[in-house]
Image (cartoon, rainbow, N blue to C red; front, side, top):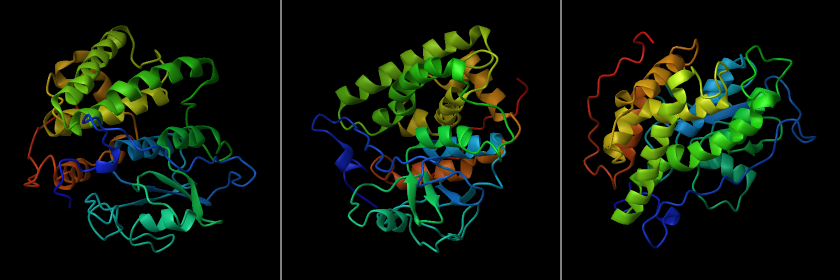
Length: 305
């Protein structure tokens, strides 16, 4: 564990802002090198990570659980990175026998020296990472496995421009905004992140006043990308990342939206609050040196919508 002011010193600028590392592996299923196939590709994920959570939800909603395999890492990440250990909800790597996810990065690029992140989409046949950018992986899961998919189109062509524009807004101020708030190391950097976060939440609250989903009646990737942040918000981000101006339960429409998506068949089984809370509160020692995991809050996501 690190005792530095920031858990990610290489992703901190000189004025205290958290600047997220860019994903490095950006190939696509469907390219000549990586044709779509059942059983060939495997996801390495963490239940704790919202970026990985996106891929778990899309894989489940598209009916690809028998087509694309999954391995879950230990939620506790130490100085060696994400690890494959036996435990509740996680276990050894059945594909390569890796002890640490860093081995997948080294196998793909022996010179890799950046932070090892999840999710990872792995090609079992060539023994390398195809992609480690969740925004691209979820599009591949939606589009590339048509013969094996049995689920709704979550990225319909007529809505793609609107989805992309909204996703860009949500990513900057909400999905990444909570991290920019939490890992800011100066007051000004923190306020520059947390104020736009709540401005955007207020805009989304208004948008959902007269529609079920962000695009209306159609569930899309935009909803899933927002949901993975909202489901963690009150349990983690309010306290751990100092996003405390208001809770999601204080926003009636966002609270209804979060419960509604949680109750879509298959989604609840991708949510693991034990992994989520243990990861954040026991891994980010610059924010929580005691590593005590809070017992609350008690929130009923299964309450009627």
